[in-house]
Length: 224
Image (cartoon, rainbow, N blue to C red; front, side):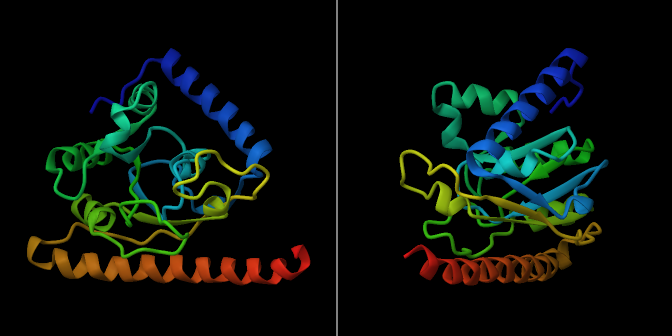
């Protein structure tokens, strides 16, 4: 995966990213928290919970390029969407057994990029956290790079799975957390280390989602 883009391409990429960020701030009131934990340089894995189709976009708004995002492979067969994803950093990953796609993800990390991998693998149907898969933690431990936990709340309310169009003016909040240090794990120890990293990720995500649930419950009586 060649990360060396022309200056013209980089300028175009950054311009469209700023435009989309402004658009999302207007439409959804997107807010970014924990900015000091956003990796400014060097390779890193960003591991967020997954609520809606635009999670990768809102997470990547403030992350310096080069940045890539592992995306369900079927999206690359859709008209225009596939081209757009491929042009702006989407990497097709067709499930946990897609070794070729996974190697492409590892390659961009080894070349110094930031990579978004959703540990759940798929979007949640009800906004709750699903069981974490091995992909994000394994990538970090294979490459020996930090894994940055990220939470997204409000996105499920804005555009839940199965809904054709999003609800506008629903606040979406992205929060970055202190990185989890990951050194290269020996093959014999990899499975244990993956479980340990996933436990840390799950604890952070569950705590944030539970806090968001309580906030919504307090607001509901005032809206009824």
